Length: 321
Image 1 (cartoon, rainbow, N blue to C red):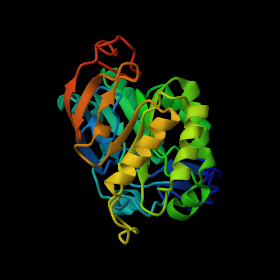
Image 2: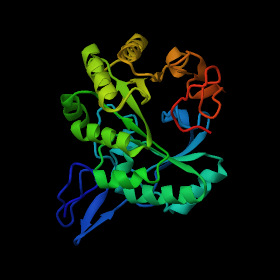
Image 3: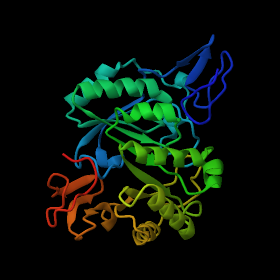
Image 4: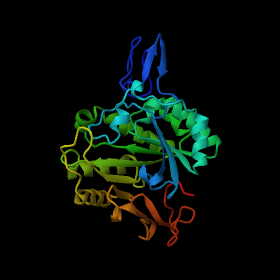
């Protein structure tokens, strides 16, 4: 039996499981072992995902099950992403209950996040439909390693998608993430064609993906294939999981990456995990006026008027109130 959820296309024998460890061949029936079993349910600021062009200052009811189709050595949530279903003894929570709790907590969206939501596709899809029925939005935080058919289904119900782009390097994907880069590039191009709002995040890790030439090549690809309006977040690495030997990313490295991206022509470039930096704010690329002012995950002011700059009237792309 072959799995069609992600580009690995795992061929799973009877009694076996795919790479994600949460899908099993039971007598010719391929079943999910994590449907309705969220191990994390939190009320987060949407800026934490991070989304900077989606409902600024709103809350996202954030859920995840165990499992992932990558093994990133720097994963902050490795206790969730690398766990097996047997390690997570949690109660069953139906999709309707997730949507109801999100509404009760006054969240604007449900976020599928923390691990890789592709591996709990059926549960995510049902939760997203329940959310939509309840008048809520949906946001997906993904590594982008997903097959075309399930991605198309998700694009029908997602308000926005954030892709964690690991590096512009095949060797980084292979050696640091146990993954592949090309399918993620294909996902980004499909998202561009789909019309669904999406943002990109690159975690800059000292000595591994912080080379200036690599960042320039990545920005050139983004501009050529996706356009200048895709928000690009460079975030700070903190030692975690199997990369405890590396130091946190110097703030100067993030500021340099942001400068390179802006020089290349990217219009909305941010820095994250370093509160107080200029790279947290959204400025109008036409007149330079500050339209969203942030400190960390906190929105200090939002002066957008129907998604437009109040100073010059230029449209700022995104999903706004």
